[in-house]
Length: 503
View 1 (cartoon, helix red, strand yellow):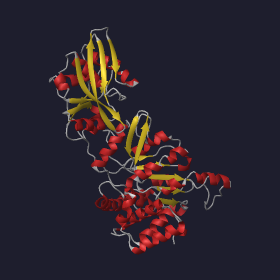
View 2: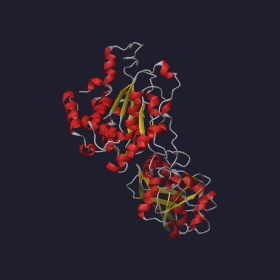
View 3: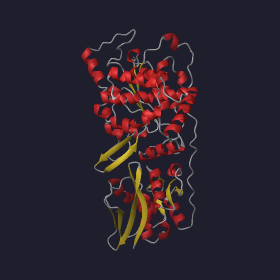
View 4: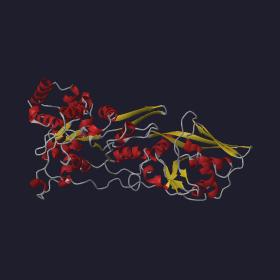
């Protein structure tokens, strides 16, 4: 006799429904799993057998055939343990078949019958809601993130025995409870940064408009220190943004915080040895660092030292705010609306232009090093700041700069203006090229200044529009309704970091 139980397979940051069908044949006892299972799914047979026996149930003495449909979709992960165990028990008549069909199940089983957390439970819950299931039954550890999805019941269990009792009407499973997403900022304080007034301004502009930024300077001048304090001046995640981030982190198998829910803006800082797959996404369609930085910051320290293919692979995400991964196993689209903060030394030794230390790099080495920053990548960077070493008097004066809370208040005000004008979740850096002119609403002197700069320097159309986006952010910080000449002048200066770039 056969039985049908519903599960789901993770596919990028989405989930596809899978029917788990079991038939018991009068043959020699064995277990066969068909339907394009991965090795982790094939190995589930022994885990399921031990878990059923540990739960006080008898494993069928027959040939157990488990079919995972659709058969042409590869089944990955350990989340099929629970639906396969329940399908076997339902086929043997030990679980109510009608009740089983109303729920979607996902969870890994231990040999003792305990339920362990799986990745992608948020996407699986969304798929169950869209398909019209009564609810989902998941491990306790996955309850908080799954409970963020409304419109269905989210039940959690610690053991297979509890699930069996619930389906038979002899037990109760608690509902998963969503955590409070409104957590106070835990970022580092910008007041700890001494000096670097220009860089602090650029950091505020980057936070207010979601702009990409390049910090250049000798070792120890504060590049990493500044970048690490950017999350502290970003506005708090909205509930919708927290749901987006949690879905991506869950698909990657990351347990953010104690509840597995992302409540703070992501700050991802991969090492410069990271591969292209680590940055964009792996062959099994797991999100990479760029997607994990969605709605937050991707900090690439020692940017020229990254592999060329990894650096250049960021071109499309920086422009499109999304990542498309196409592999033999399928195609996945990851949201990647992040602010790129790159840090670089001026030369291989790091002391080119240093006020007291001489550069020891030959001209050819400096030229090769600078060539690592290709034109297409530089075009996509809105702000470029050259840092100098902080003088000893300023470094040890004990005078603290403006706090992150004060800067964040201005950033939140600018972001609220952008939300009202651009739409929810759309920063100035994220508006399309066609919308820039209308959203900027620049004055005639401001446009004349921008046109003169573009004609004089020969900058690309992309750069011209990015300058206008930064000018729009500066106007939002100032509370101005239109972009004026002063904002365009400041935007040009922040991009080229020098008065020589100004007309």
